[in-house]
Amino acid sequence: MGSQVRILLSAPSLNKFSYIYWKAILIEIKRLTAKKACASEITKGKFFKKPGFESNYVLTRLGRKISRARVLGLIVDKFTGNENSYSAITIDDTSDTIRCKFFGGAKIFEGMAEGDLVDVVGKVREYNGEIYIAPEIVTKTADPNFETLRMLEIASIMKKQKEKILKIRELKSRTADPNELKALAKEFMGEDDAGSIMEAGDMTDEALKNGGQAKDAKEIILKIIGESGQEGADYQLVLSKSGLSESAADIAIQKLLEGGILFEPRPGKLKSL
Image 1 (cartoon, rainbow, N blue to C red):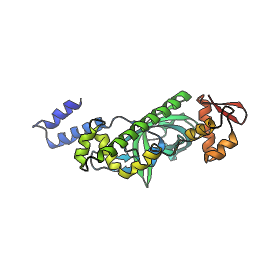
Image 2 (image 1 turned 120 degrees about the vertical axis):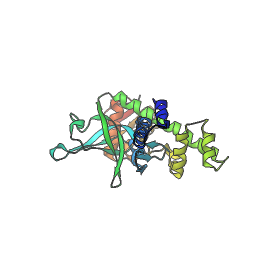
Image 3 (image 1 turned 180 degrees about the vertical axis):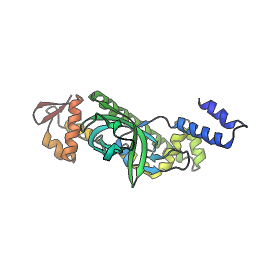
Image 4 (image 1 turned 90 degrees about the vertical axis):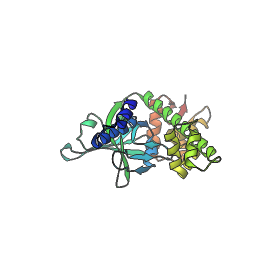
């Protein structure tokens, strides 16, 4: 399909309107894939509004450009406006919360309530300084293994992106010319990846320190319990050592229990499997 569009764009008989039309389609094809991300990667990124047919995007601290995102989280708030003209949910994936705002009625969130685990696919938008998702697909799931799988997928994405950032920094020692740097990077990553990392610049410093996001609450809790030995850890000890709010800790612990990653040998005592 992409090659066919490129042929059409080069056709001498193409008028100006058709050229713009097909160029828009080509851009749409290129951005169809929704990138899996955690909420904090999006909310802590920098939003860019582009002119014409170009897609708006968030440039993250991992050096990723995200126009369409896929985020899995727990609904912590739901709102429906007058006459169902506007509706929104706020989801929490323990890294941060992000709102999903829909201006086409309430049907997209029908049958969903606070406490439900949902997988949201949509375009990244910004208004009054708030980065949010304009949802296209919202799927409710009750399978805790789905959340564990997504957590592992996000960790893998961050690890690979961190490796790309380090490679770009290594290549910078060879040349300061951006075009030459992209050419050298082609062996290790796509040109778009290299360009995004270069554009992110100093924003990637935090990515190198902690993987591009604030530490996940579940990761913090598992580390504390893992360091407590075979006896496990008391809930109050986990709460005090984690530095998390009680609500954030409770949500993370509940998710780990539901996923079979943690269990309670007795009330108030937590152990990992």
